[in-house]
Length: 452
Image (cartoon, rainbow, N blue to C red; front, side):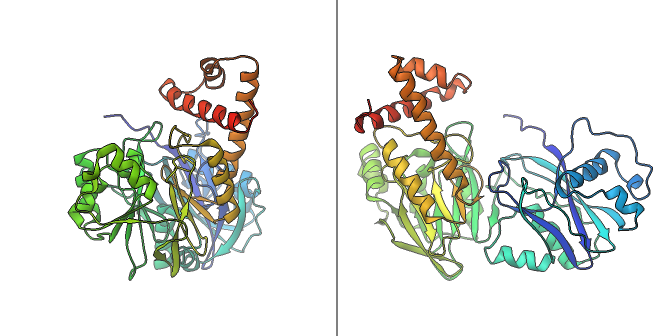
């Protein structure tokens, strides 16, 4: 078994004035937790000083952690906590809680949450490079916004807010780390209300190792599980155990690649539920595995704008998003609060445009299509939800840049292998076959456009 990396140490700071807490929304272009509501803070530097503070209140705490708190607050909010203590603005500091991210998390942190009680509400100068917005609010209002599907939050943020909602004077919430029984169950994560991610171990390409099976559907509407694709009988058994209290009414497949459908037919038979998919996906799976693959399973083929369920009262519809795969489908509510993009982009790794089902020109058009729809959150099959279409836009820019590089090298007479070694020299060699597929897809696009 691969040993998971040791989590990075970090601090998170809750400034409290009466019943209100100061919070931020991270910029959508940040690599970690883009567009999430959170509290100021950051990593504890490896060379963080371990010299104890002499200032009262600060001297009561672990020196490395509290120095990280002071440094991060100066950097992110332009506020000097030590000076605030001396000026009687800071009344007390408590180490409120601790949380360690699970082994499977895309970003692993061990975070200490500090509660800082203020004598007056301060107008902090939040770093606009780090935060899209900042605000004072109550824990109740922040939790209500999350429950109404209006914000992205990691679970520890909600747990801390819940603790303060239940006891606004709480100074010790303890260890809030969630314990995942990965021997028997699939982890369950909710960063956006009503969208439950089950990160299944799957036969996907590195650096990803899991595919998000997604549970979706309002309480009194059709419950979907999207792309259930465990990589083994053992993981399949864990999935069954995990969803036994929330059995879906249907299985939805975004496309025909193995890390999006493996075991889905077995699951459909066992649960006696239909499979919803595109006609193209059905055709490709039948061609590969035979008509018996979906034997004794009700099949529902869908296309653009077909309604499949509801989320927060908004109809959820199918969107055709080909390019990576010709039968690729996405989902989004009419409110465009989010868009499940499958493999249109990757939260972990790079999208491959493979032949014959992939087409680079179509991929470009699909990226532009989803960007123009302007969903508030995009949800990939690998990685975490992200606010705004920023990652889609950056992917499109990257593909344009890569195409320009490939064209230039081709015109210099470079072979495909030489192009690969020049453009992907720093890439994991295990991914070179996938990179070659993208090079070939770009060259084919350029040929169709009569540029070559």
